Length: 456
View 1 (cartoon, helix red, strand yellow):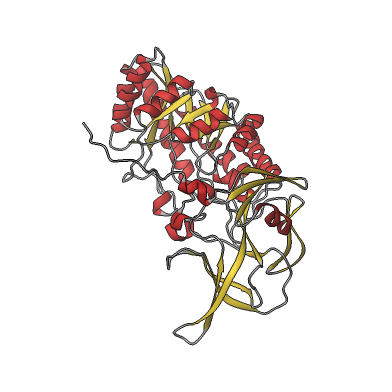
View 2 (cartoon, one colour; view 1 turned 90 degrees about the horizontal axis):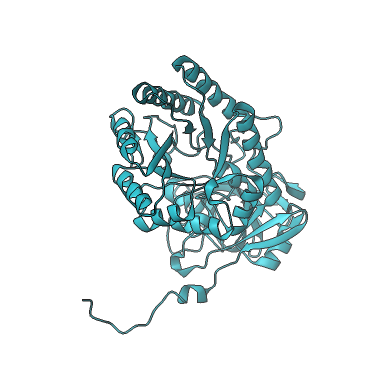
């Protein structure tokens, strides 16, 4: 998993503690002081390191281009997207993978080229499909038999031939959490290769004159560190390409192998690096294509977490703390911050682990067993179950939680009517607000006072 030049730790590459010890210290990100950022933008706030984002995107792009003559890097917008981030991706010449009309509208608002967008989703509505086709979205990834007919009909009505991929299920155990494993048989996604539904989907798609079946797609899961799953999926997908050529006398020219590349969330973890995983996958694809006597297709990948995850640090402010005596007589300190499960649901949803550090000062106090919790009215509102923090952590201290760029702000909710945090990009000592903090008025604006009316 190690790389000579790709940052594999949980920190963004421009995160520094000017004065530090094992608990943290005086934190700056891309030359911006955590204390000044909180003073300017409030707390909690997501701080995204723009140069680190560019570094990671370029590293995945370079690894892909070094192995394949024809290739495309897509960024998985579900990890986190905003108009500003879409503009960065446009500058980087990286495509965007969206899975809702909302994500698509963000890309279009950034004037992102529609031809470089692919549209995912297991239950796209007719309105979403119509918007995608009318907007000129490059590829729609079809996920069901219903969708074959739906996309075909709408494309025909719009007088267009829509390029599509079929999402296939290669039957791979991705060695990750059940909730983020997507390529075994018992999931909602895709057409199973083993059951024969993949072959049937190909046949149905080939009969639709308003569809251009250009390739196939698979995504085996998320937060994966082992190569075996990627390699086996690639092998089975190439076999589908070989079978297609034998049946139809021509080749499918594109293969998208998805994303799911793991990142570090704790000090004991190390991210999977692009110059480690891409050559391994490439070797399998090239070997299997040569054995099958088919051309190497255009290869696409879809990292999201691997690009944005480590770029972002959430800054919290400590509010209260209390000591709780446990059954064994030991004491655990509960430290409460001004956020919680509303801006980071992952620990409560599937036990995701994070690290946390003091961000405003160095402490020489002794470490105590602590639990970092949020301010929501839920016992399960726990950000970190067990962490050693200095005994003198107090109200007003700042805590930094690294590697929160993926599925933090994008999965944020308004539980307990909590406004969602701001997102601030930092670069070379300057800070820029890219998503403003919600306020209570934003939430109240959704309420409507209307007289009841009879529905006909």
